[in-house]
Length: 377
Image (cartoon, rainbow, N blue to C red; front, side, top):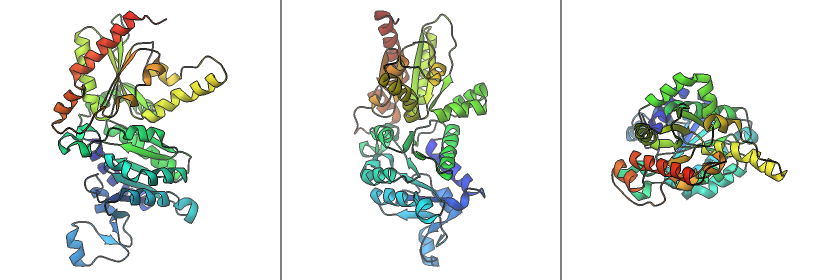
């Protein structure tokens, strides 16, 4: 299952529950079906100031249009989407009307309405933006539909938390946590979820769930990252393979290749680069400002014990996770997408950008060689 498909399933499930259902409002700039909202709209209906007549209803199968509909369909205008989310997200403050607004957009076209998104965030509005599908994992649709810079935008947006889960179980926890924060009126409650249409085998996540237990794994997922594969602590050379989003199958496969070569490769799945960066940077900023030795966050001790080298892998610009080398205190090789515009199969484009298992394993061996040349103290 892909995270885009999982999002549609989860949102429809929420629409069938008595607690959140009356407050959910969705919107999309003419991409509701393509971004996974159909199931919710089938259940909750589409908003229209007057009831549809039979002829109009026939043009939109299964979409009931009425003043009670909870989906707002927009034309092809991302600026309208973000302006609307800004107002829906302030309904608590302006109208004393609790709402849980969720907007979907093709991820590369997030930039088309960026002014509206920035203003909505700065106004204190609380909402969920789902950018999907994303990255070169949308390979056959060509370069115009492949986003590479949106994670950087998400991390820099004030008041918005950027998350990119690879697995549907993690998406479930992140989406419900966000809606809970909005319902409680918390600061920085808004979220940008960058999702993918690439189907992934969910077995690695379920194995991690069995190892951690639900409560502990959920805590790590919401904190920003967890160990998808723990290679153990033995005498073998250690390396951390850090993946985010749709590339996790290649990262897991690379760990297997390295194990065959006698290298213990731990796999860390980053569910929110934004939260992980904040966990590292906030104490660093305070300690550096007070001229104290920076503390290492407990989260990083759990994810990256020791000072093993790091390889980061992302279906986005490679610099998005490159800072992890400094955070871990070890050499790092960042892999990602630093060019765009190609069309082909996922494998062909992953090969072009060095995201296949062989390339990831090669980067890990290079990082280990860097350690040998410059021993860490």
